[in-house]
View (cartoon, rainbow, N blue to C red):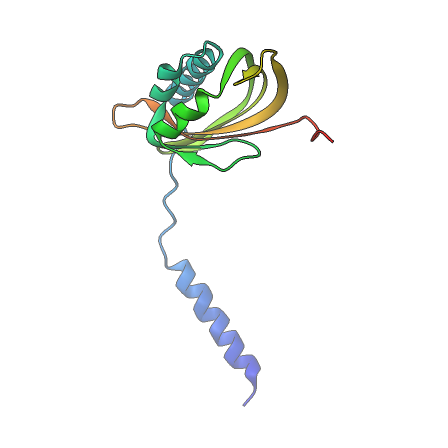
Length: 159
């Protein structure tokens, strides 16, 4: 018996079974209201960072928020975030938002930044340029909180 008829029959059966399945439900994209809310929350988050307002920064995050800084392990939750924020003082922070998009209750924000900080134990600020990705999660009350924050530098690694 030739394998060709068997393969053609299998192909026809596979095509017929996929044709009978209902189309996948597509999750709606972000509304204009959601994009505006995320933009507003992001702007307030940036202002809190520049103002070294640690309580406000913590309030923008979910209880289990994950922070993924460059050159160190990721950490999760409010106590770890508070400890990290205490390790430097921000003297200047500016953001250029490049994109906000998402589906359902998840959204991402892609941006570039310039930040000047004085690390704990030093007296002079250092400036860094880079990019970040924030993952926002919509809450039951319609607000958006930061679930994941990851960033990295555009600066070359010092030799």
